[in-house]
Image 1 (cartoon, rainbow, N blue to C red):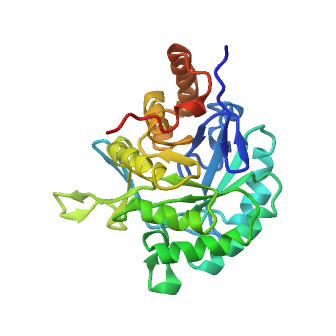
Image 2 (cartoon, rainbow, N blue to C red):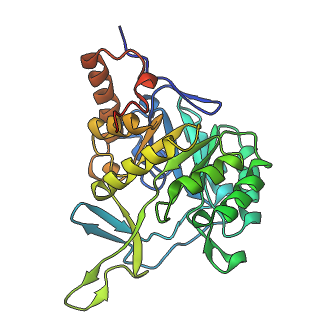
Length: 305
C-alpha cells in the first residue's frame, strides 16, 4: 500500500508535508530546472513587501561551522512585480503556492495581505513577524505578544486565505507567542525563523557581516527548532510547520514526531538543489519500512516523560 502523505494546513490541503522555506528557494522558478515542483507539498516563495526592498549592503552571507549567517535584509521585487512576473509561472504547476510577506508597520502588513489575497494562484499566506515595527520604536513584532496579537488580528480581517504565522525563536517563551498568534486568528504556525548570531574576523576584528548581526540557519539550530516545535505542539491546537536545519528525511521525520504537521526545507537547498524531493522520497521509504500508512498518525508521537 502506498503511504498516505496528504496533510491539512488549515483549509489548505497539501499532497505531502514537504515544502520550501522562504528565502531559500527564490520565487520557485530558480529551482525548476533542478526538481519537479509538482513533487512538493508547497512552494513558499521569498518574502515580499508591498514595495520593492533593496536589502542590506554586502557582505550579507557568512558560512559557519554548521550552517550559515545571513543578513540579506529581506530584499525583494515587491508584490506587484511578483504577481505580474513570477506568479504566472507558478500557476503552471499543480503545487500549492504559499507567499511569505512582511511589513514595517501594521498598515503595511494589511496592505500586503489584501494585495496577495486578490491574486489568482496564491493558496496561502505566511506572515513573517520577525520584523522591526517602525511605528513602535523598532520593537520586533514577533517578540511582544501584545504586538503580535495586534498585527495578526489586523491581517486576519483582510484575508480569507489560510494564514500561517512564522514565529521568531528569539524570545523567552515561544509558547506565549504561539498562543497570541492563534488567539488572533492564525490558522497555522511555522517555526522557527533564524536565530540571531554574529561572526567576527579575528584579523581585522570587524564583523563579517556588514549588518553586524544576522540570522543563523542550518543544522546548528535544529535541536533548538525541534524543542520549540515540541513546546508549541503542547501549547496550541493548530497545525505546525517545522523548520530549522532540516537536511535529510530523518530530520524531517524528527520534526513531525515532535509535533509538526508539515516541514519546510531551507539551507539544505543551497547545498543540494534536489534536497526537498529527496526528503519526500525518504519519508515514503521510512513509512513503508515502519508500516505507517498515514503521515498524520506520526505527528506528535514522541514518547517524552
